[in-house]
Image (cartoon, rainbow, N blue to C red; front, top):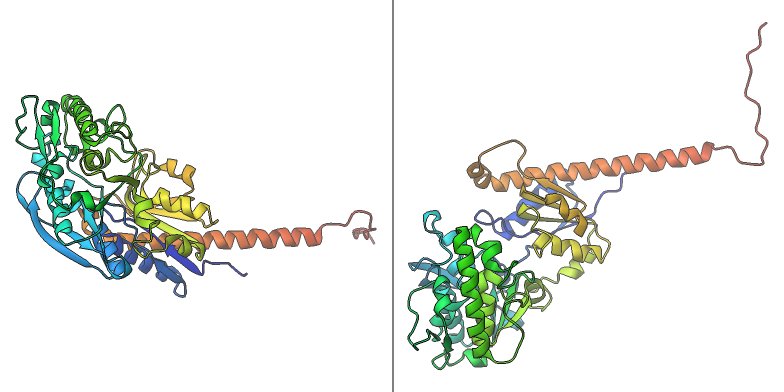
Length: 425
């Protein structure tokens, strides 16, 4: 029996947050695929999503340079963050990964208060890139621990947020923005206006309202129900201030990507004139990172994607959904592997993911799963590929049965010999 198996497998995952980078996830899956199919050609494409690991991925893809900087972290204490200067033909472009300066992983669990955390360190990273003389800065948004509308980042770049009496607000965080009345940009970094800034975020994220960042992501960052309402009101006030400073333009309350990273997108758009862009348009389609994803998808027989948790949010702009969308345009089947399958995970079938699998084979503590994620990924990839091989065997058997049935079927209009009859002697 001849079984048709994939000859080229594309592996295009995101990272597993607070566990494995996208590069490590891709390598682990590739190892499992090769166990099941030793001769297969594996194409590893770690996918940057704007969150943790984005700068390292793009710097690696272009031969650039990762620059460490000590900045003010999300709870006001120093942290070592980084920004990347890309290499080769795109060496005038910087990638600022906001999560390295203000990510949720930098906020201790007992200090998670999105009304108080700050993006000040993100502004310091932008300033460092400006000082290095780049022409374009891409700010990757994702995995944030903040909800300050980018106010802290603007202050780090020289802006002043004033109250109704003309006095600086002082303090940090988003809760104070309910008192904001005016944004003074007269002392902004001297290169800020002459440098192109692009915010790469989830296009589904908006600043205010029922789908605003305070209501959707505030609870994940530690906000109580009362704080959620207070933050939403503060960000609404902040949107007015930003739009007055910016002048004519789209409503930053509802602009796509405006809510990225707790409103950092809206803050940079209003204060710096930054362009708000879907993260995959900015990171994959601009030619900046050298991934050339669509061409590589077109060569694949099967695509495998992955993320830490697949749930009802996955179809809303996450890496697996984007990979599925691009694969559907080229007729390439997709399966997804996840650290865990959460509420609403089957919804990913509606966006083109044919099958999903968890890396956890038996119940185990979360800490153990995180610690052993690399091994579990490799094992899960092998199991999944063996299921693919089983499917190929079933398909081959079914085709063979159909051919046999067709060959043995009597032809209409042609005489058929009578069946032999036993006669008694």
